[in-house]
Structure formats: C-alpha cells, structure tokens
Length: 363
Image 1 (spheres, rainbow, N blue to C red):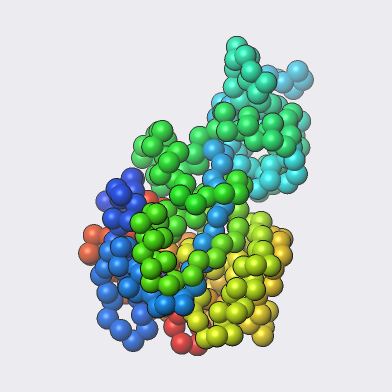
Image 2 (cartoon, rainbow, N blue to C red; image 1 turned 120 degrees about the vertical axis):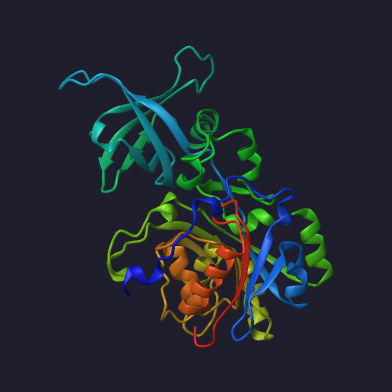
C-alpha cells in the first residue's frame, strides 16, 4: 500500500511532553465499529470491558539505553576525539548490542567509544565499546568490555532513559522520566522504549479491573528503537521491520487458549502485546508458548488471529504503528478518529492519551 495513505497533519501542540498525573487521569477514545466515537477517561476502562475479558500486558522493563560518549583518538589514520550519541536497540549476546549511532560518519569499524570518566572510582567507572560492524541508517554493532550483569550495571550507571525523539528534541531527560517512562509492573529488563499504552495503569486501575472480573495475563516483548524509525519508502512492501525479542510462557498461552475456547475476548494492552500475540498464533487460532524474534509488519488486509481489542496511544503519521491500528480498526475509521482526537485536544504519542479500539469485522 502507498505510505501516503497513512499521513495526516498533527499540530506540534498536540504532542505531550509529560504524562498525565496521576497516570490514569488521561483521556480514552473508544472506537467501536458501527458506533459513534466515545470520549471517555482512562478510569472508564473497566466499564468498557466485560467480565471474563482477558487483558494482555507486556511486562518488559526499559533500560537507560541512551548513552553519550567520546570516540577515542585513532592511533592511525588521524581523527581526534569526537562526541557520539548511542541508542541501544537490541542485545545480540552478553556483551554485544546493536545500536543507532550519531553521527555515524565519524565512526568506522575498530573505533572505540568511551562512556564515563576515568576519574570515577568504581568497577564500571569507564565503559568502552568497540565498533565491530556498520549497517545502514546509522545502525552499528558495539562490543562492550563488560558482559552480563556487570554490563547491565554499567549501562544503568551511564545511560539515560531513551525518550522518543519527538520528546527529546524539545526538552532534556530528567529524573521524573525514570519513573514516568516505566510501567508500574515492569519486570524483565531489555526494552529501549516503553510499551506506552501501559503507562496509564495504576494499582487502583488494576483493583477496579479485578473487581470487574477482567483477567490479566503477561508476556514479554523487548521493544527496540526501530519502533520510532520513520517509514522512508513510498510503498509499505519495501519497508523492513527490525526484529524484537519476545517470550510467552506456557501458563499465558494456556490461559489465552482457554479464553478463546470459551468465547471470551482478548484485549492487547499495546501494539507490542498485539504483535507478539499475532506472531505466535497459528492459522487455526491456537496460541503457542515460546521465545524468538518477531519482525511482523501489520498493514490493512492482515487477518487477525488472536486479538479482539487493542488499547493503544495515538501514533505518528506514516508510522508502522498507525498502519497497524488502521489494519485493526479500519483506515477510514482511524483517520476519522485521529481527526476527532486532534480537534478535541487529545494528547498524542508516548506520554499522551489512550484509545480503545475494537477489531473491525473482517480484520
């Protein structure tokens, strides 16, 4: 499909730079096939769901994956120190990460990037990474001098929360983001972007959902920075997704298969949960436990196998995520919903408001 079909004009003022306080004070736009758009508050979510519905959450934890360092002076070939920005996006092994690096032209294979200061007195006072491979679009493979838990500790010490570019361009990351850009139920470290639909949840909301007899299940998908990359091709068939690591337990798969067998609805909390579920569901609608990488790219025409409802924030124009919600709820319907949200002063993107989408018939 043509990528320009997924374009729309968004005023800068609609981009949220901070989340609602408290988290569940955000707004919620419900989009149901054949029904008028419904303006609600996120606290209305339990009443939008039925007893027996299953809400699937992504329990990944965001790493402070934005690093700022210096390229060491080269012994041969010239070139003194240079400031380098690194956004880790996918762990390759205990000591190696794929990362998006700027400015990429200042680095070549074999260069060393140093994070931290030699004056710091601690095991991870200085963190060095060697460039071992260069890809396209500023992507590189970085091999660190530490590995495993020690590397994780060093990244946590030197890194910052990896706010999306549309926020980071407008303000600096601060201590509030360490709390705000993490779900309250995050468990498994590995993401470099938050599953933002779940940033709205509070303990009070979970209590209300439990009282409504809404079941909760969890899975893990470690979100990569590729989620923020614009689609630069003119046709969706030419766009390549970055792989993201997922893990789904036998307990979760069994509970979801039971719900489907009993005719109960499955609602994905976020596009990450939806993409994981659609990646592990076969043509017969059976959800399989396991782990692996997914590069699933969902555009209109895709036949959904696992998910009946989707809780998600408002996404960028021409993005893979806006394409996904159009596939789920309808292209015309989502353009109308986004136009309604813009004129109604909804807040967009990671720290913005939420929408509750119900699958369009035939999708």
